[in-house]
Image (cartoon, rainbow, N blue to C red; front, side, top):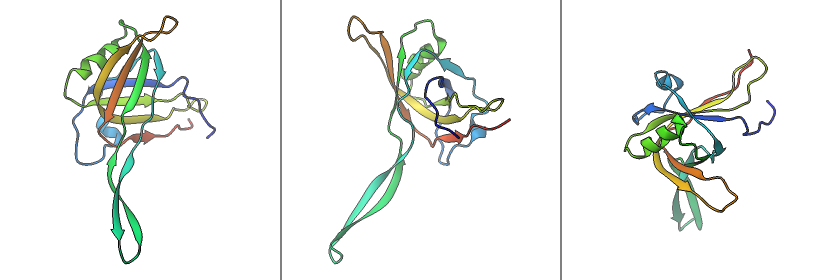
Length: 159
């Protein structure tokens, strides 16, 4: 598959979806009702990193490294403020709760007649702040999503 631009990607918020001990799978998101978060400016990054565990071994004169628990850094989402957008309203409302919400990211990479790549995950909306900046800028909604699950990847597919 060729490289793809972020332009055309869409982010959706679903309803409350609780954490679980096992990894999420695509069918865990089947009952979600999705609302698009519009007027996106930046999607940040999404994915896991392993925490580092180290042990200094005297006899080997070497620090050994192991992979520890998985951790997803916050996904920083920026949108031009649109008070009429139901997706932005849902994002702001989600910040006021302690719940995890389902999210879906859809890329604009579908082959002709095929389906696009998608990413599914749950996250707490940790912040939903407005940024006003300078006279010649658009007012922004900055949201920080604390990802609390694995990311379920669905690759683009031919028809």
